[in-house]
Image (cartoon, rainbow, N blue to C red):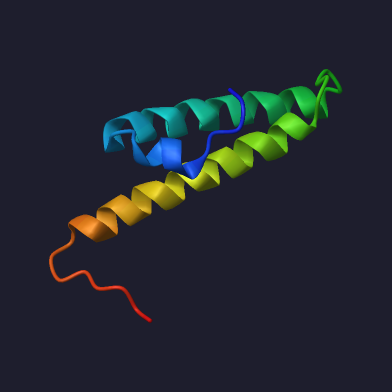
Amino acid sequence: MPHVKASAIREMTADEIQLRITELREELFNLRFRNTMKQLDNPLKIRENRREMARLLTVLREMERAEQPGAQEKS
């Protein structure tokens, strides 16, 4: 999956985000394994997957904090 913007991720539901995180973790495991065996064509896919997972986790955390009662932004 190509680069996914945070705005597109924010349109997803929490369950969809969790599912995508699970998929990325499995894919990242496979990419790392293939990289150690020198069978990975494009090692940059590891970085792309890590960053997409970080975006997903960030948006998921934002959603969780927005749902908390009394959640306020610090300035």
